[in-house]
Structure formats: structure tokens, C-alpha cells
Image (spheres, rainbow, N blue to C red):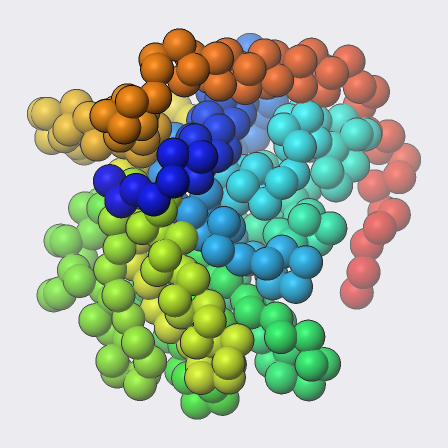
Amino acid sequence: MTTRSTKELVDHLRVMYRIRFTEETIAALRAAGDVVGSVHLCNGQEAVYTGAVAALDLAVDAVFPTYRGHGWAIACGVPPRAVLAELLGRAGGINGGRGGSAYFTAPDHGMFGENSIVGAGAPIACGAALSATFDGSGRVALAAFGEGAMNQGAVHEAMNFAAARSLPVIFLVENNAYSELTPTDTMVRNDQLFRRAAGYGMPGARVDGNDPVAVADAVGKVLERARAGRGPALLEAMTQRIVGHYIGDAQHYRPAGELDAALEAEPIGRAERALRATGVAAAELDAVRAAVRTELEVAAAEALAEPLADPTTVLEHLHA
């Protein structure tokens, strides 16, 4: 794992704990029936969100994640209580209980919304980037999506448009090796997806998506380029989810031993081992973990105590 300062990696680890424990809390609430509907968890992919957001300036930049977006929201600074309340359909949710798992947005935190259309964030991010070329904000838009979305026509159109107009967009592929339930390498001739960037005339690179420092470095490099008016880039972050594609996915399609390997390589354990190797005491890491665990327990209790969203206001806050 790439390392610089111990404090930097501890800060990354704290955010990754917050994402992981939020997802585990959501899974427990879903199992209890408090959260309903489809939920896609991101356990194992935390370093992608933590590293990428660390490189951004969320006072200016904008993130457009896919429907596996709880981790992006937490990394952007959305309080876990607001995320949990949203999924619970509570009035105190980040969108008043209206957005649920797949549609919530948090513009005050630089996170401009999920949606359930695969790859749809890419053209939306191009719109935010296009506006930046007129408003002088210096904004860079980051569109994040899974590797399966690379086969969507809208993603191709977004990349072509961004390249043709030299828009400040970063296309970040969260490559967890599965396009829903199908191994990605069985779906494409060349599974090194970052190489597609050359066809659009923009830079592309593959990065270790389980290393938050490596992700931050890669995003920072193309961010500087985009902000300077030199156009978009494509990053492919290699990672693995350690849960199913959706809650209830039995993962029968995964070969024997694959999940064990993913658990060995997942980013939280790697960061803990890297920190211990630099001399950080296990007790110090235990204290960080325990503090975040308590934070999530309090957040869940507060979210559950909030009133349900009022169904008579369902037509409010709609824009057409």
C-alpha cells in the first residue's frame, strides 16, 4: 500500500471505517425490515471513495455517483445519521425520506445524486462540467460508475462529448470484476478498460482501488489537468466488493476461494496492516475503530427515533 504520512492513512482509515460501518448498519436495518426496497452495498470498495474525495475540493467540485452511492455520500461528508434516516424513510433524511437508497442527493456536500439508470451519471456530469466552462468556477465534475456501465451508449456519448469539448470531467470506473452477476472479463475482448481512453483522445490509467493514497494521487493528477482546461480523463480503480451485488444476492456465481482472496485484499485490513508496520499501536487503531462504531450506533438510534416522512408532502420539492 502506498504510504506517506501516518496521519494521512489514519484519516483515510477513519473514513473507510465510517463507510463500512454505515453499510453494515444498513444491512442490519434491511434484515430487520426497517429499511425496505433494493439496496446495493459497497463493502470492500471504500478506498475508491475515500481516496477520490480526498483529492477534490468539494466547495467547488461535484461528484455524480452510481446507485451504489452510500460510500460516496459518507466520503463527501454526509452525516451517517442523515444517510440512515433517508433509507429509513424518515423526515430527517438527507432528502426528507424521498430518495431512498438509489436516488438521494446531497448538493451541500458536493454529491449531486445517484440514479438507477446504469451509467446515467456520466452525461449529467458533462452538464456540470460544461457549465464550469461558462461560470468561471473552476469546477471539475467526477462521474463514478461500475465497469459494466462502460458498455452503455450514454457513457460512450458522454466521453466523446467531454473529449471533443475538452470538458473538466473525470470518469472514474469502480471495477469490482463483476457486471452485476457476470464476470466482466467474459463480456469484453479487452478487460483493461482504461485503454479505451485512447480512442477518445484523453489519458487513461489503472489504479489500485484498494489503496486510498494511490487513488488520491491518481485523481489529483488528472484533476489538476482538468482544472487547467486540458480536458477529461478516464481512471479505472481495481477493487472487489465483499458482499453481493444487492442485499439477498447469494453469490453462487463466485468461484471457490475468490471471496477469501477479496477479504484478504480489502482496503481496511490492508490499511491496518500498513499502519501497524509503521509502528502504530494496535490499541490506537482499536480506539479509532471503536469511536466510529459508537458514532454509527448513535446515528442509527437517532435515525430510528425520527418521524416517518409525511406522505401528504410527497408532491413537494419536485422540479420539472
